Length: 146
Picture 1 (cartoon, rainbow, N blue to C red):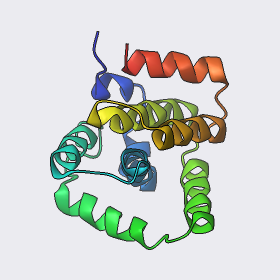
Picture 2 (tube, rainbow, N blue to C red; picture 1 turned 135 degrees about the horizontal axis):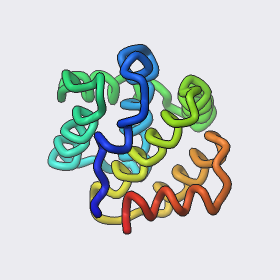
Picture 3 (cartoon, rainbow, N blue to C red; picture 1 turned 90 degrees about the vertical axis):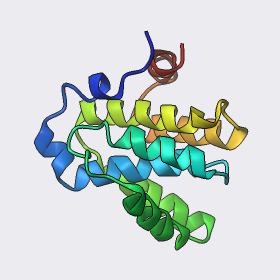
């Protein structure tokens, strides 16, 4: 069965996603998709469409994505990027939301059809940041990409 964004987030409280945590999930998805340094217009359109399926983020649009991408561009060195990513991971506190956010990141990283080495590194880092062991992370990846 193909990955279903709504089902992945189904058990998450809508209040969690209507607060800042929902925006953190969206930003993390964009970091995942851009971790290889490339995001084409059609890829961004697909990611926006995917993020809009997350309960509480139905109004997320290209303008929101462009704004987040502009904000992300301000993190112009590895230390700043790492600090921001740690902040995002720490800001998503509910275990079910972490699982759903990880799966969304997997889906967005694979939106161009494959994982680059940078995307793989990002997902491995995210799994550790969220406290997932290698087997749990691999299971979640297989749930998204069979």
